[in-house]
Image (cartoon, rainbow, N blue to C red; front, side):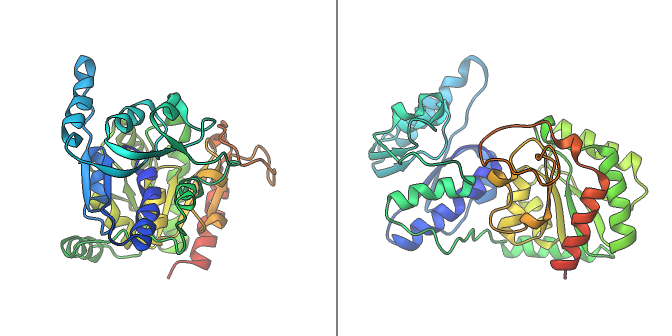
Length: 333
């Protein structure tokens, strides 16, 4: 599993279950640099192979570097959890007896060509359960589902210093994703943050990465709101983790930090309109806090299939505030 932060979070319960069932097994994760910042040092992972994909004409050099890195290794089993062509090439380059991947119907980019065993076809289900199909194929019980995403002592100290400066419990607000169709509006956030502060006494903390789309959204929110907002955007992924862990509540569209919040046990109000919350919503928790713009009308019963809708514009300020109030009532301490 190479790149996506949310998918990296979904892999953690797979790794913890593997290590629980097979404690003497050495687990290696092939991963790209950014998600490695999130999961490096995790107790279920013994080793990481970092794949650095270069751009332009030299892009193939990243695959050559990977091939050299694994040439002398021997693996009994490869789990091909990512169904894209670049992951398929890495699977092909990895010396292993068994290469287990998705069935042909779900293996994109002909990824099934690079595996020699495949899990059986399955009806659409939550992404987390989809990864658990690999465990069940191997006779491993994924229960209890644990992420074990812990903070270091140094991170705890930094976290304490940050939150000691706040005069109220924090609501971490993930302002944007890399895909504009998943994002809500700056005006909507601005009104919600004002009401969140005035009614519930929460201090809004804007969090996210260093991308231009996130910075522009944060600046637009700050220009439109009278709430006393803490701007905590940056390029430190582990800092984002400890802010989410220390917050009383999170507010997020469908993006990696939403799943980090779930893994940490931080209540999260999820904004869904482009992706199906039944498939990519917070796993087994906080579904009651999902603002469902994916539904074309309130109460719509729609299938759990991988489809996209133009529904973020259906999310209203009252919709979000209702879920914030519910979160405070049910979860915030």
